[in-house]
Amino acid sequence: MPVPYSDNLYSADDDLSDADHNHTELSPTDGYFHASSPFDVASPLQTDTADYQPGHLNVPIVPNVMVEDPTLREQDPDAKAREAAEERRDVRKLITGLLGFLVILAILLVILSAIDSGNQKRPGIDPSRPGDGNIKPPIDDDLRWKPTKECYNKPYRFVSFGTTFEFDPNQKLVIIQRSEDVDKYDGIDGWSPHVTGEVVIKPIQFPYKGEVDIEVLTNHQGLPIFADAERNTGRVELVTPRKVKRDDLDRPPCIQIRITVRIPPGSSVAAADVSLTHLDLNILEGLKLNVAQDTRLKTIAGNIRTPTAAEKDELTKPSYELNSREIYVSSMSGNIDGSYPLYDKLKVESVSGDVSIKVEPKPIEPKDPKPAELSVSTMSGNLVVREPIKAALASPDSGDFPSRDYSVAVETKSGDVTADLAFTSYGRFYSISGNLNVDLWPLLHDAQQSTIIGPEVATDTKGGDTTLDLHEPHWAATGSAARLPVYPSSPSWIGYPPLIGGPSSGEEDGDSNPDSNQASGIHGARPLTLYSSHSSVSGDIHLRYPSAWEGYLKAQTVSGNQRFHGEGLEVTRRGKLPMAILEGYKGRDGHSDLRVESISGNQDFVVGEN
Image 1 (cartoon, rainbow, N blue to C red):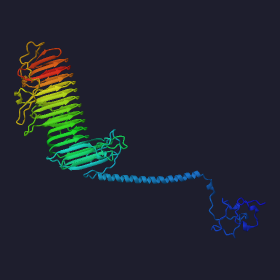
Image 2 (image 1 turned 120 degrees about the horizontal axis):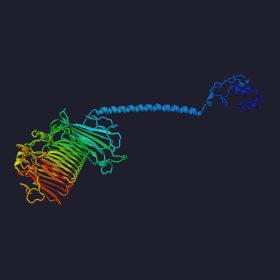
Image 3 (image 1 turned 30 degrees about the vertical axis):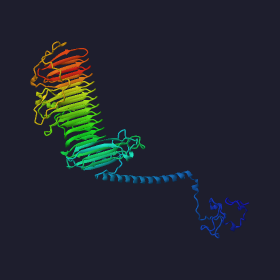
Image 4 (image 1 turned 180 degrees about the vertical axis):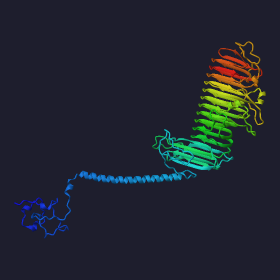
């Protein structure tokens, strides 16, 4: 029986001699094609049947067909899939790189256009633009983003406003920075923005027109900020919102502000008023501004600084001029530093900040003579107030202190006081728990010598110590423009008869100083008539008076020690319990009256000794 071919299991039953029926069959010698179905007769790949000879007749005829490579079936399908995936990744990398290049190119174009527009300064608020903390706004010095720990550190936007400004003698210069409720934030329990910055007042040489620049940095894109500079009215104002929505912020937004006012030299205004809620106020060297009326410099949280000479350099004048008859300087929690002129009035006060100032006495106004009033106070801060008295003592007629009436009042609750000052009518110094360290120079007029109502000096502390050094007085000729001092009402202790001629008979424990010298005008000095009082609860009192002082003294204490001595001083003690009382006098013609009181504090008084 014939063996059937592998691709035709029924070939064994066919007639082997029937070639016409077998011409379409494939033999093993024809090759294995993986499909036993014959091509369609209508296919163009069909071979002519007349010339066809089957493979089993040993005539190898291979049809013209597309044959699958058998080796392809031997490859791993997973490898082929990996190859395709790699090709897709390569395509994606190419596309991603191309898109990144386009993005970088677009960013560069935006930055270049922003720099170009930033260099074109124009009035009004410039459009906001993002930054990374390194943007350099078009100003004199870089205003850089300096976020504090209270602020969230995100890219900021920069807003600038600049314009020319006119300073008119008939109008005020007003600079205001404040916060207020904005309509869309009104009543919202949101964040209070953290506002910092400064107002800078500086000179400008060219052009001879003033300029005002307002610059703002903030990390809150939607923060409403109002800024305006009215060149014709002399008003500069910047308003920030008091509250902002919390949204998704875990910290309050931050606002940095700088307002720069450039003033031509010798400019004049009717008055000057600077009121700042959050910002510092800095007045720079070289400023020369004339103010016809008063000048008011006020901050809530910011510091106030003006130029000053070196700490020990009294002869160098301040490098700026603020010519204003009355100057008021105040801050709630900020410090006050610098140098200030004293014309008719200088009032400096702070609630919790420190005050450290130098005062430059100025001449009287001949057409409207007034006393020179100096008032410095703080609640809890320390006070340091100095006039150039050391240089003036070395050369009294140098002109450092023009001839006029000087009055001084210095007060603090818990801070210490350090003062080097001159006075004519009175000098008053008060503190509750702070120490008083005072150098005073009596600057008197010739006409005061003939009056029995002299100037007043008073110190008062509760727990602090008092150290007072009263220098020899200087008698200046009374000029036609110098108004004599109008003294305050006589102290309450006036009326006690001075012990002229020695202690009264019958005094207890009377003793006198064997080194007494009763001649008036020791070392040729004129007798000084002075009404003074020094009191303390538990603090010690140390007093040094000049040889020119002559008059009566009375001191009393409950448990403190008493030590009173000096040139020409005679003292008498009377009473031990419950209070120790000491009385004394110096000179025959003096009208001074000195009172010293303490509870447990010690008392130390010396007159006329170096």
